[in-house]
Image 1 (cartoon, rainbow, N blue to C red):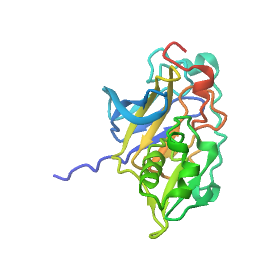
Image 2 (image 1 turned 90 degrees about the vertical axis):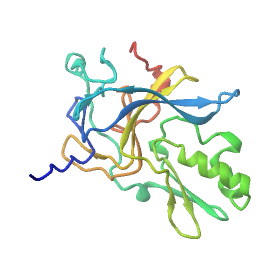
Image 3 (image 1 turned 120 degrees about the horizontal axis):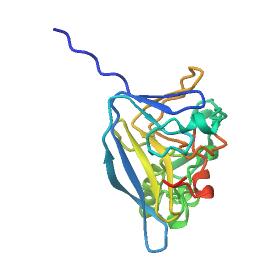
Image 4 (image 1 turned 135 degrees about the vertical axis):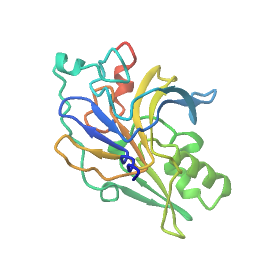
Length: 232
């Protein structure tokens, strides 16, 4: 008796509707941990959510059953038109070369998690990567960027530095800004547009779940501006 091959992890965007998740992807809350100055310094695991092998996540931001869809998008006439640049990451990225490490940056993907800011910011730290402490901060802070806006590269090997994530979904929470953040895809989850377009598969991707991003399907930090929360 042959075994059934597990479905590949995938998120399919429906036209003006939810994200359809397949592949039995684990789902849990990921909390931005801050220091006494309010700086983002670590990820903290929160509640795990039970789910089916396939499930629908709210994309309009107004479900009464967050994070899952309850069809509110139909009642409010949600416009989920995808507007993001579909070119591969490297084609969009700006490059900053440091002495031992380099930094690529696609600003439009910023999800406002702010791990880039401490210790003088990664844009300054990249220029000090021949210093052990600065390099350590630079590597950790770029790898903690949930959207993959920022990627660290080893100049000696030419390879990116990426955290090892199993395919999974995190629901970001931001206590400092008292709001809920994006849907965080980790470990190479395929995203398929409402028109069937297959976005580049990346290790770290953040999708909008407040409904207000102007860079759909990706998060652009608007959840902070609108104070997105469970009462929205």
